[in-house]
View 1 (cartoon, helix red, strand yellow):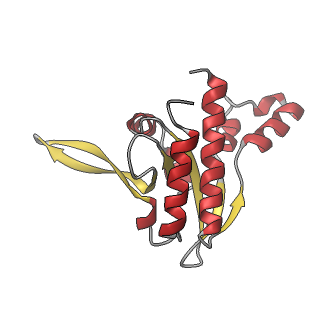
View 2: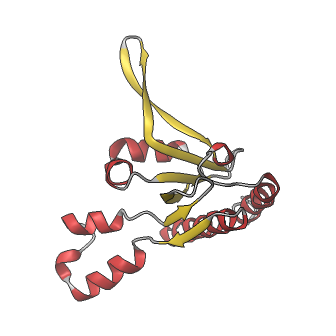
Length: 170
C-alpha cells in the first residue's frame, strides 16, 4: 500500500472519530501537529521533524475533547488494519503520547469488532509469565470509556462507515 493511501486512511479515521464524538454530545477541538509543524518548518529549518523540538511538536495529539464528566482530555487517533502493529509501535516509542501529553488513543480498525478501541494511559500493564514481566496492551471498546460519551445508536452507524471506507473490495 502506498504511503499516501495510509495517510488518507488515517485522515478518514480522524474525521470518523471527530464526527462520532461530536454527534454523541462531546465537545471536540482539533489540534494535531500537521499544520503547526509544516508552518514552522517553512520558516525555521532548525524545527525539522527529526529535531528535538520537532519531535515534540509532531507528537501533539489530534484532538482536545470535553466529554461526559466535563474534564478536558487529549485524544490521538490511529488507523490500523491490524491493531497489533500499533502495540509494537507503542512498545518502541510511547512516551510522548503517554507521559508527556497523557493522551488517550482511539484506534480505528476494520479487522474485527470493536472497530473503535481506546487506550488510556498507561497503555500497557505488566503481567508475569514464566516469571518474566510481559507488557500487555490495555485497549477496550470506545463505548466503555466513562469519560467520553458514545451513544450506541450512533456508534452502530459509524461501525457501518468503517466497513464502507475500509472494505477490501474498494
